[in-house]
Length: 378
Image (cartoon, rainbow, N blue to C red; front, side, top):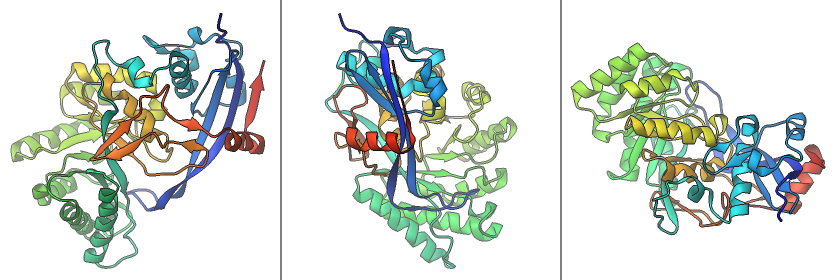
């Protein structure tokens, strides 16, 4: 009989790199070019293994040693609460042992899959790299050029960082630059692409209305984190959008993953919930997605700066009816082979491979473990 007890746990941080430096958002300075990926790999007594992003320390990992996999995860109930720190490695391991992709483990029994499975995605790379430029025209052209780069990489949806006037530019100048950038990106990617804007709480109610009104012809798909989470302001913004006939959705949940957002989604003045895929977790997202589906609301898990979110988020798509987008942060990480995935016509094509369909280079990973990670074994 097979022996699926966890007998080896290895952890290390791999370092990836974006194709260009990511600039500011409304409240932070440059996000840089490097990406940190804390990885854990779990191996069973019979030699099966699974890996994924994991922030657990050595002592927390030690508690898993010797535990049968069936006590840690099942396809029906997900990862046990006590093992949620290892959510992603456990799902990958379960997929490896079952010979199925994670999406097939979590989809409804009646689900039928095209091959490869497709999930919509958006290019999230349009940060404020223009702040050093004095001219709105030059700044807008720079960001529009970045959007066009994404278009050439087969993206058909784009998210723009706005809120320059909150911190980095004088208020009026920042608002004007935001509007100029939005209009330039729309011109660069054409009328059929979807455009979202993310203010990272850098707007207030009146600035949000002004920007949405002056870019109404751009048909923005959503406004994300317009201001700090406030049900009074969000309800008022929803009423104003409806009165003006502007179809832009209200999205939130990235920065402050407040439980109250789910109440606001149920009430109808938050349209899209965006809890982070890693801090919220894959198993928890399955539970959250079911609630959002019951209310006919949308799910779009946030992901930035951890690379693997590009891929693991996509496996939620067939399990959540209202799944809207994967957030795509273009990155390459030595040691991670994601070549089975590709972006085509605005969608991620997800491979029919066990687990999350990613491969870990053993030599690269073992070197990282030796350089600063840890290894535990029975």
